[in-house]
Image 1 (cartoon, rainbow, N blue to C red):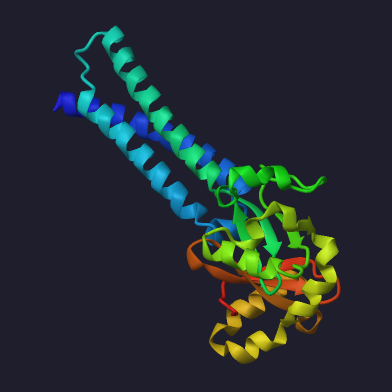
Image 2 (image 1 turned 30 degrees about the horizontal axis):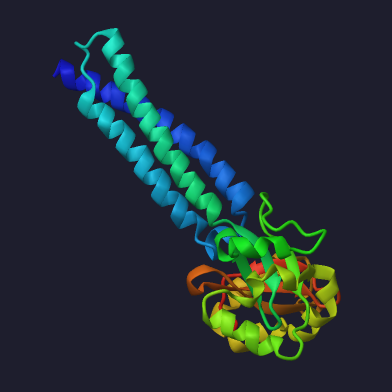
Length: 252
């Protein structure tokens, strides 16, 4: 009984430390790399829960198994050091994986917005990034638009998209968001159409309108496509095309 009480105490201490470290990692992931709504659009929440869940559970469980109060102080510190290093290495690898899958841009792709992730852009394409645009920003996605395609480019980029590299993932097409403002406003539709098309989602739509700070008649919308087919809707200022709010609704 004494042995298991000691093991339980060591387990609890290790679990508390692991939860604290996971909370700090969560702040990094969810407020810097995957700010809302991209934690849902880009799968950041699921990735982090998998990484942190395994790390938080396995470390304390190993401590529960190996801890023995009869061991010398040196043996205990050796056990804790090995477990801690392995646990931090696993967490570091997991965070590196999440970092490589973070959203870097929300790009207007002619009839929608597409979330572009760090891993979506072939490394050899990065040198094509226009001056003034950061290819792989660290602090959440930036809003961009694409220059118009001309001539045979339409077929060329369509074929590349079929091969797995979406049009929005080509840096040579990127331009500042403001440069595409007129095209964005023209492509977007009146937000009032959402209530007519999706009456069952009226509460979510009205909540998004309230968050935008605009009347519904002053808003337009476009779908925004994330990872693994996840689609939400972004509400835009009808005049400036400024993104104002998001609705968890596939509006295609």
